[in-house]
Length: 430
Image (cartoon, one colour):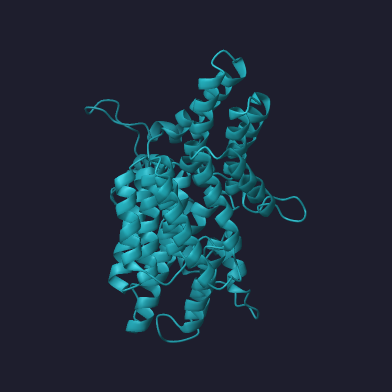
């Protein structure tokens, strides 16, 4: 993008903006004052030197594009634009940083910049606190917030925090910002994987692990290994999953991440048919969970709450064929995942619980109940595609094995295949 801007190849700029920023040509046309069709012609690919794209060569037209897309003047080889020199109006009241960060939109993360300007140093304690509060709110929103929204907010956070790392600061402040970056990369990995961006999620996970090692932060390292265990679990890489669990335990022995690691081990053991290892892992995880204080914010993605244990046991018992216990835990998960007003506060857990009830129903001959539960689960607005499809495949196999002639079973299979085809799209690096 920088190269295209420097060369005034704005057709390439438009193409990259659409490809990597998901910005339509219609929006670009509106911003720069061109027709949408002209934007499309400028952005068309060039092949073998044929079909050359139209180029903008007139200086005043170049400035129109620079101003319309808010490209800093120095990137395009022109003087700073008037809008770059404008100063925001002074305000007598600063909003609560956590509210600004959680709401997103224009000015996201800017509160930390405002606070930074109150001192001569590159960053101060108030700015650091506002960043941490913003990250905390994003992690607490993870169970229910729209995945695209979370992805945008997390990327904005990473861009802001990594920019701050370029400034002057103490060693303590540098480590704090590194830790903030690590948590954001962890959250980004989870959201990317939920959206089906497997390669991008692996990059974010690896970045978090490296930062955890550089900052000497055991919990971030353990969560990075937990995420690797989750990836391996949903991809049926059992030995990789077990190796990741052990690495996570080595990295950290005190935080609730260890509970999650034991749970992953139990779920993998159930899929391998090792009932003894399932029980051992569940007992170890439960014992560690009981030693931890009950969290103030159980919805926080990187804090394991006691209520989630029903979810783990549900998964293990379903795989072991103990349908009665699995269904009992599934109903408990749905109840816990639903607020007093009927709103689902943990829709991803509830969706997998419905699939579990669907599997139990299929095994007892209740095909309509099974398909009804499965369909409702697949229609959830907030879902983690790899985890959801892992359990949906179990229900699909039960239905096809037991009811091969039923049209409803074939329709459910096609519904799953449609979702899978929808996830098979080119991935972005970030």
